[in-house]
Image (cartoon, rainbow, N blue to C red):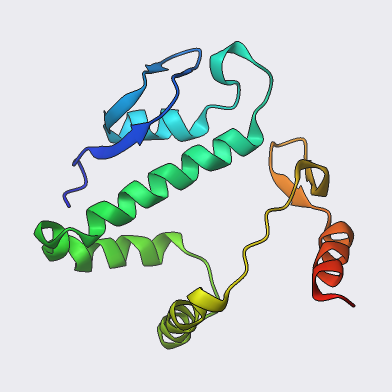
Length: 146
């Protein structure tokens, strides 16, 4: 996957920002268009939509994963790993990260996914999501039956 390859995914509802319109259907986006897409905070002239922005970021991550897993793109894997290592900050070693990924894969069928509602997340003055850890811990305790 060359750094200038387009990104492909399907959009189920149109999204318009101050600078670009993304229609319904298959999307083929350049790097800049992808950045524009994931950074939209006020879609379709409405107020801030932090969770919609999060969903758009997930769409792009899944499209990137699909592209990386294409056999035709495997030759670019070493360069992608080098680039990713520069961008990811963690205290996990490569070995630990690999083991964690394997554990997640093994537990996938037993995993329970919880969706945190809007009232459990605040937004700071820089637009970052800040979890209400007390409310989230209470939700987990309720689900565990404690």
